[in-house]
Length: 206
Ligand code: PRP
Ligand code: URA
Image (cartoon, rainbow, N blue to C red; front, side, top):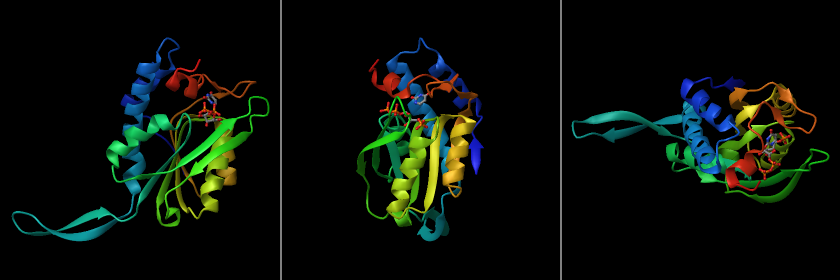
């Protein structure tokens, strides 16, 4: 399943992020706000179970979340989506995957992994602003599947058809959510028009 969340508020904020003159502070704030808006849609099908509660007026059958949610940002840039999603799911646990793309080969290189227990019973959200070749997302999903994860959602800001196809081929069971589907990758693996290097723009490293 691929869902592109064409919501006017998301599109407006993403457009501000795309502007090359947008600085680190505003870029981070827009990303944080988009993450929260995306989380509302991504969580639409979270499983619930009935629970009996008593209101000040009387008994009532309510529904509460029946599975743990684990948010897994791909370092570094995925960190930019974490707080916005956590505001909507404050009980979520957090795992981390450290990957960077080799600039020559574009292959993901792993440098860190830390997960909470119970991935096999949880809804796992792998989050990263950019889905370019898809190599990083495929590697991250491989890593959590090796640790038992079964119910996986991939949440990215900007993707391209190449990246979506790569994830769908390697992991057809994973639901993919994007804020925008861009046109293509350039010769050095950057999304066109995209928003540049997300990690550098979030952390001010260039
Ligand atoms: C960026 C981005 C993704 C990856 C996408 O990270 O945040 O993780 O590239 O590219 P792919 O789909 O071709 O794998 P980068 O490797 O630049 O690391 P950073 O987040 O530390 O800047
Ligand atoms: N990583 C980024 O940060 N931006 C791109 O356009 C592609 C990969």
